[in-house]
Length: 527
Image (cartoon, rainbow, N blue to C red; front, side, top):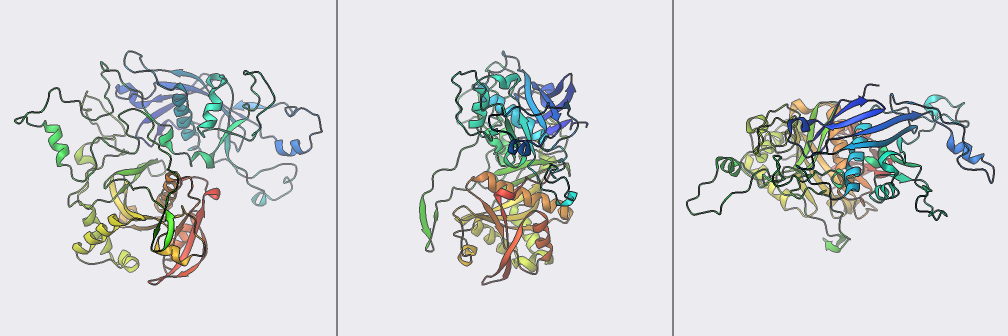
């Protein structure tokens, strides 16, 4: 199988994957333009083994027999993913010039970043056959055979051979082992318990990429840009000082989002940007006891972005803004925009700070809502048609809500729909359900732009919103939607996306179908 040549990471960085002797080489696509502090590259060794019926062999294993006394393994070159027979390790790392970048403060974090990016590429490959054929199921018809979990094995070889590397990666949640014993070996060098590590697809997609993605810090005399999009002002401000033209442009950019915060991965300290949710503190809202909710992102802030290979565009979600001016998109886009970096003349492929003309939208969020809500198709279900003042107040009410926040979905920076993500327990829906967990979430949705309608795109953004809910809080175990019973098209889309219909609910304003999806059955976002 010819591997994917370009990997579009969710932080806007691109990696080129090319075959080399004995493996695959991952290289930052932007490093050729001297604008990326991403590590120069790394080489992986990836091979496949014929699937063995380990579980059945283990059941038939005689007492006292060594666990590793399985038949010889048949190892061959990786061509396409297998269900559980692929093995991977990083064999070497090519670090950038030490005179231009500081070494990684934590080598383990750098290794984790490279492994995460490698797995991001791997789990974008075609899905293997999930049906399991073993001595028990061999006579079962193919459609009726049990399905297994797609996973890849991480070998304790190459840079993973050190005695602390895999244990640290396991503590970071990136790799796992079915062996949960301490082990009886006394020697530090004993690999007992760390030889059969793996990563499953289901688990990988529930890992927040902000835990692993970061960049190296450029030195003070380096020609590479720092974390800030602007160089520091060389002198103190004066009363007559006139701002630079670049600053004037960005000050004129509407919205409340700071230009120095281009997305959820931005960090001027070059450290991972993930922070775990705090312990629960409880309050009452309308006589309902629930945890204090974290504040949503700011108006205009992008909180989710991911490249979608099947449509060749970046999908992003940002908080809606009540600004009367159009917002400038500052997330990555798929357009090959040649944008000069503010510190040096460089070209970038997936630009995080693209030109104004290329990604600016023409209307404010209120104007988009006014356009969409007055569409007969949307108004039939939402009932929010009217003058623009009505949509402006509708949006302000959404921004004032304590248990939800309004969201604008974008394809390559162009708004296509409106969403509301809410906590179910203190929502009106929670009053009509017999049991709701503290961290159950739900969302409302509408697609306003005709060019972005269609079953395939719906499946993508539905799964992306569910993906965000899983990443936002590990305690969220289910996501719900309650579309009106006559919205049959959305009901079909939800079932195709993995939701199941639990029941009908009689709400004061509508009769709804209650759809749910549980974390433990979710495989991953649509690609």
